[in-house]
Amino acid sequence: MTGLQRAGRWVGEHLVLAAGLLVLVYMFVPIAVVMLMSFNDNSESRNVYAFRDFTWSNWANPCRPDGMCEAVVRSIEIGLLATLVATLLGSLAAFALVRHDFIGRSVANTVIFLPMASPEIVMGSSLLALFVAGGFGGRLGFVTIFIAHVMFCLSFVIVTVKARLSGLDQNLEQAAMDLYASEWTTFWRVTFPLVFPGVAAAALLSFSLSFDDFIITNLNAGQTVTFPMFVWGVAQRGIPMQVNVVGTVMFLISLFLVVTNMLVTRKRVAAT
Amino acid sequence: MRRGRFTGYWLMLPAGLWLALFFVIPFYSLLATSLFDPKGSVLTGYDVDYRFANFVDALDQFWEPLFRSLWYAGVATAICLVLGYVLAYAIAFKAGRWRTLLLVLVIAPFFTSFLVRTLSWKLILADDGFVVDTLQFLQLLGDDGRLLATPVAVIAGLVYNFLPFMVLPLYASLEKIDARLVEAASDLYASPSRGFLKVTLPLSKPGVVAGTLLTFIPAAGDYINAALLGSPNQRMVGNVIQNLFTSTGDYATAGALSVILMAIIVAMVMVYIRTAGTEELV
Image (cartoon, rainbow over all chains, first blue to last red; front, side, top):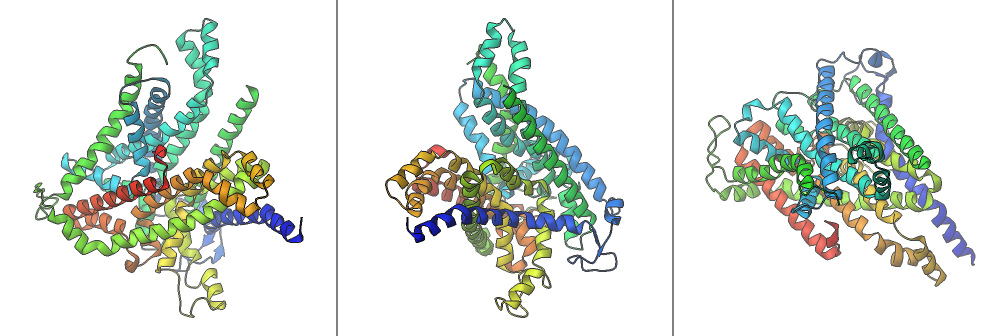
């Protein structure tokens, strides 16, 4: 092996990893900035885009900006409700698609893929067109946001649960039935625990999609203000630093949940 | 397959109905809206007039933001492909036991609000910020040069926001590649770069196709980056559509523009998938 080849190999071994890590750093810079700015004291300044002094006061008084906490609560309410409905309906559909044969199954598979491949602005305006045509133009709000969120979460839930379900060994269920477990018992004692990590991941995904959605929500919200809409509204005037507190808290909570779900799944896999 | 001939239908029914009512049928409403008589208003109501001239009007007035959206999204997708490929490749082949952790880190940015993250780019790229100062020091940017309110800022924001959509499908297809194939290439005296070009890259094509689509489509419809990081000169088609709907109340033109955007994207996706030869993807 010549020196040149060796050098080439070394570059291949380490440079790719280093470059990959650099890309990852790039993805984290804004999050670090959000965390940093949550400690920024800019009460003296109109320039919200510079770090001035360190303070705990944003964390101590997260609800000081007018309407922000109300918006966060509303987003959580919509998020929980949409997650509940989307996870339930989506998991049922995933079972249908993996375990049952029915006319129109391939059509259903395509339709489920489409919301993930359509621009949000088009889905949002379509829904708005429907609501206006149905005479709900003046009554946009909580309910229309909820309907929209369940719609776009469904695809993600179905895809996530389907992936988990199709990787499942059906012999385990067969074994339970051979040992005289009823279909019902088999489902709750064998199938459900095995599928659960997929369902949990889908629910987490739904909630974060719902909590974070802006484009579709903004078109169908009427006067209702969710957290992203609050941020959008204040972005033009000057952002209260408490927005960064909410961003940081969200980040830490979801990271905790995802890591927990992963560790639990891994333990289960190790146990079986 | 289970007993109960109709179980599948019953399980599928609720989700299917929801998607039919609130995803499929709305496209019809949008189409109807795009054919409204623009003389109506939100208050007095619109008549479906089969006014195809709406499309001509919309294109005539807004061809520029429409074209700009496709252009920005295309550039952002290309950059994402390069960055995402490096990252996905590193995770799939070089990360060893850190794989899972790195994958979590890839999706971690999703956990903070999209808007809050984009706003923090506004701070990073600010006129007296670190990045602008450095570029000015290196003479890459004039002394009064700026990044905010330029196409660079908007494209950088798009790249940042949609990068995970590129990395995940790329990783999924890279991970499936049988390492023995790459070894075989090297046993047959292929250099590492040749092995990559002849074996790894072609085998990762499904990931490339899926990743570019999942990046390009949302990027083309996005208006948050253009609104927060750009100026009216960087206005994208999403900005126009949302303004027409929510501020101007010009439903006819907004509807027509949405239909045009969707049609362009569907056409591009179909041509792309044909040429890439991965029909089984969809």
